[in-house]
Image 1 (cartoon, rainbow, N blue to C red):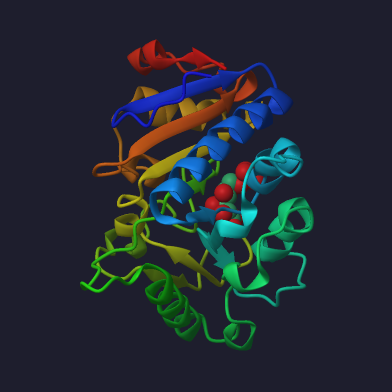
Image 2 (spheres, rainbow, N blue to C red; image 1 turned 60 degrees about the vertical axis):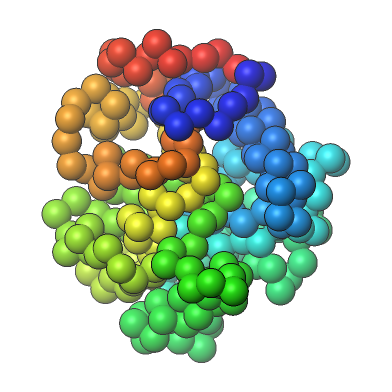
Length: 259
Ligand SMILES: O=C(O)[C@H](O)[C@@H](O)[C@H](O)[C@H](O)COP(=O)(O)O
């Protein structure tokens, strides 16, 4: 698979969700190897929804990835206990963490003692990231090796929703939201400055239910949250199954590669 971290947008399409998971396995394994070689670790932020299952279906059996060097954050997380059915941590635990040897201390969850105080929970998450990303020089924004994102039918990503005040946040690394249109209402979420400072950002989108929003995002100029993800120097990739990509017609399709 001709993987390269081009600065441009790269769109990969797959015949079905299993092929998409196979493509993600190769993509993530390559980025993980490169990052570990470069700085001894692989810092990754994972979204919730259908992404963890799509990400992990093949990757959880990968025997070459050094998961012991992974440092995991969540692109967004619900303000619920870690054993709650709505927890993104629990979802990724069931789909991936239970199968691979990521050290528990390297999996950065929302502080379970702060789930009833979203603002405090967001501040605590920033403190956790400071521990991971701070260097001897002051670091303005954390630089993840990879951020994995989904999109909702309304074009939201993470817990950044259309027309929400949080879209304007350009300083804080993580913020809380208490009026999420997608339940549950209280969450913490990474912000656009963090998303757009990542070395690599990949959207993973599958299913015919995403056809219209994906057509809007990739074929029209606009300001949906997913359209505001524009890595300053990093790569932006789309991993799509054919069902989701059916209405994508833009010239970016020239970047379409079958993996
Ligand atoms: O915590 C969340 O709800 C997710 O992070 C959210 O941003 C998700 O990625 C989209 O809503 C897409 O969800 P689906 O992939 O399930 O459609």
